[in-house]
Length: 140
View 1 (cartoon, rainbow, N blue to C red):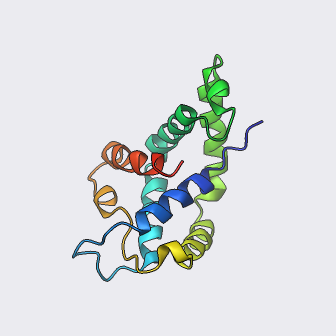
View 2 (cartoon, helix red, strand yellow):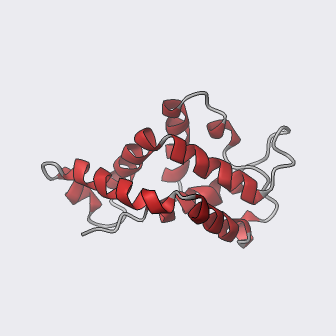
View 3 (cartoon, helix red, strand yellow):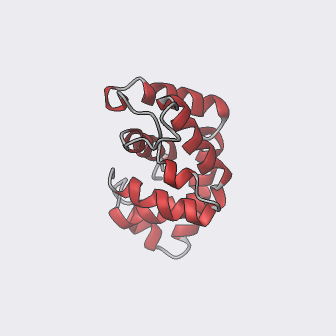
């Protein structure tokens, strides 16, 4: 079975977003606070976010073999179910705090003050997901 590694995929997004240029409104936001905002929005948008994440990972076959799994009858649905199961633990406050602490302390996060502020401020989940998935694709 393919370990979906939702947290790893989201953590990669967080590092990319942390390196985004801050907007004036987000200038005082710390890297960890920004990371937490993205994770919380992903969690709030779980029903839109996880299927889009599965589709993205299948489209680039990462992890290797996920495209073949998704192409099987019922495969995409099974992968979404698996990802949702993993997301239950990956999206807890404690997990988010730990992951964002690690990301914020990484050299790649140096000087970062916001995480994909444009995406986080999207008024609805479909808009957020449409904005955030292309950012994630750049990191896969």
